[in-house]
Image (cartoon, rainbow, N blue to C red; front, top):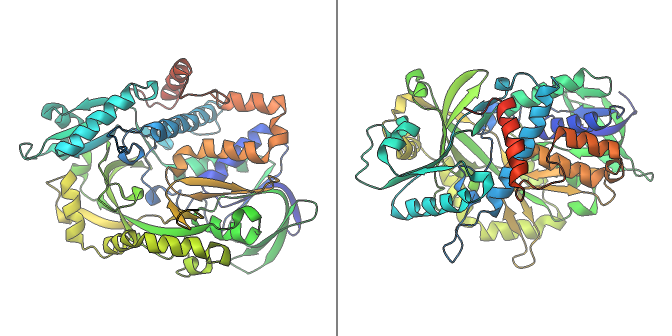
Length: 495
């Protein structure tokens, strides 16, 4: 491996890197691609099944994607964009299943209805408005709304079990072909297929210690084997930093001007996991509620059916907390080591303006089992303390960036940061994350492989992998109909 020369170096073995490697390998099989991972296995951090909600984020159930404006209107543009992006992911996965690059769909994706559930006059009124606004668009035309007790019991029997419906009005929306995605299984399948090709190398237990751009525009990347401390170097034409929470520190090491001013706000997560098989059998959906006042979007409470390694599980959460780690297997010094002169002002600004959020996260981390169970009982009133145990989820590093008005702002989305010459790119941020990985990686290709993408052969291959490429699913109802019919059938998500 010493002084090896590659066309593409991918840092991190999560869903983003695996998706980019797959796309590039399909577009040009002659590209020499290498992936390095500091852990001893692939997709063990945020991509692993137990470290995320597994929700195929499509805007169906996530109320934070449809805020209400000052005039009382529900804004749906973000939900439309996320839904269209998830449809892009479904298209690529369908193509890869058809090409036998991915296994039988049930190994990584299963149909699990997506529901939004609220109670109280104000929230029921909001949900009704949200449903009306979304259903009017072809992307959400199959969304159902109900405030009928019998219908709600049919949709979510566990939640409605012995619930006193006379106390508060209840309502829910439902999309039957929502999905649960095992992103860890998906990613490991992609990497396994890549390893069968001559143009791909995976190096585990390997971390990046330095990276520097040469005068010829290529990158010299210094590596170290974690087990024996052996060092080596890679000469790479293009570098992608897809290392989850570790991407920020690597981006800072690159020294590119575009990295200046970025900081990270790490947030931890935990789930309550049900251990009673009889309870698990009674629930088959992902039911999202409204976030508590002051809670970050990633803390929207939801009761989730998960299908992991073929077995159904039931999770509730997430319970957020404050941490200084950037990775689950990271160091408590990660946050402090990320501080630079160029991001100090944004960091201090966010710290000052987000004190209530920090206090909320610390309070979440200090909760007792009894207080967590009290939150769960808002969803499932009959929940028994003894049936649920706490399990750690993954870490998320939210983006902090410069802001003209406040000096710095905290964002909860994802963002691609790339060099002007397209020789290096990094993915920062969290939700909706893995669900829109395909669209995000197509964006990387459009930014960083501009010359190659002008080749008609690349265009044709990309169009074959993602039939809607170059067109708008938001604007074209007939295109969506064709695309969705195919993906629901191929991935076995339809009834």
